Image (tube, chains in turn yellow, purple):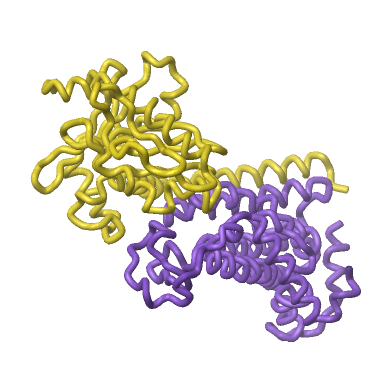
Length: 241
Length: 243
């Protein structure tokens, strides 16, 4: 049997060595990891305006994504009254954290992408619940603040082949292009994921069979998430900036 | 305590550096002592990460690395580790190595890291690794322990890759999704994945094939592993008596 003193000394030495090793490893890898994460998130945002990009996202290198984002995308942080918030960077706003705050205190990210002709596309972030866990997305809206230019969705744990199709099947987000956020009466109805086919060409997309709850989650997420942006949308529509 | 460990190796004549015994350490886990199909260990991660080939290959490499290096570390320390706390010592070594792998993967290949999510961290609790440390590295020299780690990692990885091959092929109709050499083997491709733009739709086999949704669910991995065990046992009769 080893003495208690030996055991203590052994364990202390070993854990100290492990701690030093891991701290060193973190120090070495952190810059690269942060960059990779930024590229990943920027790709997700740019997917919403994929059609308007100079070239497809898949053909872009990481550096090209960073450059494009730097050149073409303006970042804004909005409060719930649609006013610009100083001191917050849109990219660093995490909606999952904002959702925990009282509604009045939340801050929303807004990205404005300018295409080759200088037309602005407003990219709004939404977050909601699917069947198993959270779902989220970026909604690109044209300058009229009504017509959808493109969307991208992602999810944490939807069923592959069913709910996960909101991301995996490009046909699903493609349906949202040129749908309208507002109805003729000027109410925000956003887009409904409807079972059994499209009834209203401006506001309906066809649901994925077998993924009813995820589909309803998308409908709910859009309606609620875009509602938060309404003060800002109204401002832009009225022509003010 | 230190003496017993050395004695188990016994008095040995000059052994070849890579002789028959060493070769057996590498091939045994692939064949008659496979960690997944014979010992049925490490099933959890085998079910979870095998929907596609790329994460399975990354996972295999990670496990091979962790198994080999933790085996070597523990084997070198085996005469100094106090027996009362040996499991904790093993756990700290494995956890350190796994964290190194995770940090490296996060920096080098962020999307794959996202896809593997918690399963890299769960290598720490992979029974194969702890099992080899307890059963082998605590009683053998570093070089042999290294080979044993590589062998068991390979045995695990081989099954993972076989399972992932079938699941990706029938579940998505593709192979190597997420890498530059992604191939669409069967069925129409453009609707099934967003990672690449469809270029060769007509060239794929079985154009009318519809992807099998079951294959992407964890249950499918269990079926395939079951079939693999069956095939393995009918091929290697010596295994049948063990059960």
